[in-house]
Length: 187
Image 1: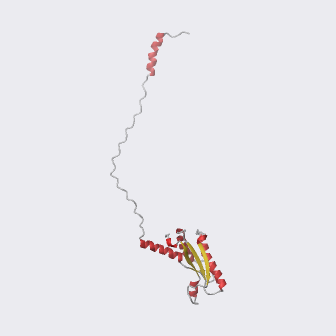
Image 2: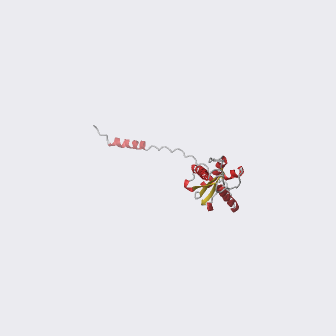
Image 3: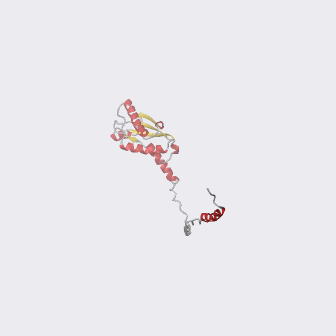
């Protein structure tokens, strides 16, 4: 095989060099930058939403007094019954809101009866009435240990007399705050 002469190589080399030096493709034109937005009008300070109105001391005391009154509200029963009436459930629901807002509060529920029936029967009925109210509250989330019950039967009448009106006022559960009542929060 023959070797190419030097003269041929010298003649071909510049052609190869020129072919290898092609122009690089021009880069795609860059889009002109978007014009800067016009300066915005000076921002107005955003007003904070109005704060929730705060209670005056008088209003606060009134709310605390209402919460206390709700806890202490007496509930009533039908003759010879320990089932909660609708008005008793409504009163217990109001107590429930206060008890949930005040986990430090402990209460006592005392069941009472009218003067009809024996002492033993009335003590047992008073206990069932107090337990019915306690069960209602516990079933709705109040810790059982926060509620004590007692029964006084017919020993502590709210109203004296032998009329149906007097009897109906004596068939009741009374509520007493045992602890935590001095720092009540409103629901």
